[in-house]
Length: 156
Image (cartoon, rainbow, N blue to C red; front, side, top):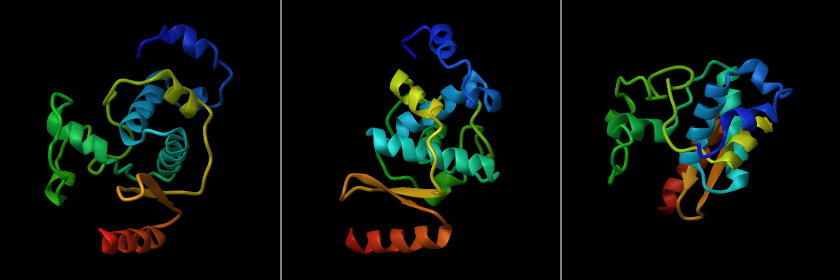
């Protein structure tokens, strides 16, 4: 993070999230979002999904953590993830572990940290990236998620 962390977090000292999560956890969540989304709207919704899944003791199941588990952030994975990849037993793999990985998986921009500290709300628990529309598709439950995912797969 290219900013003075203490100064940055001091601006948010009365933030409710800082009572629930440590500064490091906020940065870890921000790093997950940084790797998952490029636009502000998607970042907000993905933040809400992460908080909803943490609150419901669900695995986060974030593909970027699987990629980090495989590459340790040292190179780009130039292929699609496989079902075997999702099962890798690694402390950063959020398909394998509950909760947050032990550390950041990427650089974190201050705008993403601000989004996380805004504690965006939604009822969404699932999402996937629609490469055709270049946006994330969000769902409130697994049944809805599977329907949307199956519709998407028919198009590609």
